[in-house]
Length: 247
Image (cartoon, rainbow, N blue to C red; front, side):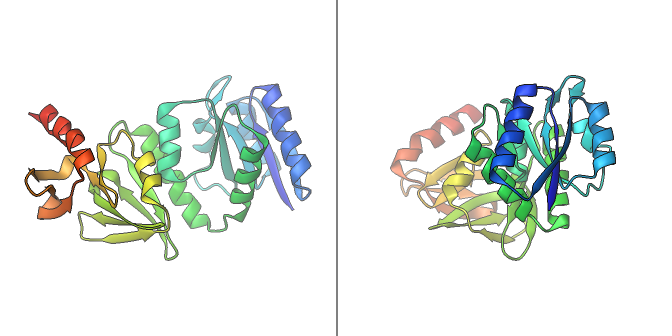
């Protein structure tokens, strides 16, 4: 049996979460709810749940203060939030589970299934640590990459480019390390949107801040340590605009 609590200050959201979990998971027990940071901390200590639904913005502040009271949590977290650019960005980069309000039944069902299946505590702690780093950092961000071998935490500034191979993506890093993950390059294009990465070609996503030169005649660019990559005709105007902004 799995157990959970809800830390949320909106009664409608509490009722909706409870109903969805109750109607779709017969082996998950609800242990209670709390509307604030203070009562949330006490609820977790007294009930020791397997996972919690945690609203980001509570009546007495940001709920991240709750997690700071549990540096080595035994529970897992499903964050619930209204749109916040920095919070959502931090969740995505850290590969943590979150639900954006307003949510639907399937959103809850899928994320609960996923968090129950998460067994590696060390892996989960890496995600939590990366989240707090990303949330508290205004410019330097880190990205969690998971494959069959292990979970990797990489600085986004250290990514030279990403190469696509059907449903796999290979990350090429400054330290000559390569990391292969079973996700499409399109998913990372979306995740890194606004982070100075350009889909220069169908098969490549390039860190624009590491460009060394642009060969207009041969439609290639040189990036970190003189790595040569192709650029498609349709992407050349975006690259030219970026370079002009630097001048």
